[in-house]
Length: 307
Image (cartoon, rainbow, N blue to C red; front, side, top):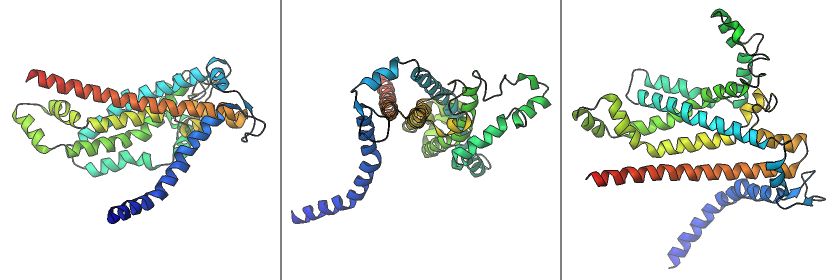
């Protein structure tokens, strides 16, 4: 009994620093944001703040001057583009490299390299690419004889093209990240399963679809969660490229939150948007996990019925 108490005591001592860090970095800021969202604050201090309960939440969704619905719509569009364009590209690359092609390690390094570059640097790089005066994109269009296709106001200055131009650098930066996650899963699939499928007459595409992809569903679930939640809280690249403009065309909840905090000095409303972002990220993570479990349960039930 004494040995068990000593063992559990040592475990608690070793876990305590991590627990303190976890509470201080994650839990405490969330609690503070929830508390601040209940006040109409003109400064970072609660002194002199007016307690409005859920007044900030009501104003957030009903006031036409905050543009929360457009910000949420832009974030959801980025999430959909990430899930249906970025992730399939990452999966295709992972399946291709997972077959052990020549120069596999070199391709992995090249595709993953953008992930290692600072997002601010990537934003500045793509600002130069999109520049209407000397950008390489316009130079390429001139060479192809379609230089007049640039939208009025420039790529980042046009409401119709700005959000799409923001997504392209996001795609370029993170396709390698998801590819590496999926590649690790593809390489972990048992070679015996592949060989058994090929002996039954399956083509390479059928092996990938019916053997490899079902085997890496846990990794696909993680990638989908990362892609959706990452889009909902995206900030740095958008802020460097457009700061949410033009005319809120690339506004997302995080840029709106920064605007409320540091431009309008509405710390209570900024905290309200932060709480909304946290809630949405948790909700989508739970929904995506549940959707994958439901599909897995349905597949197993179908297999049992066939037997």
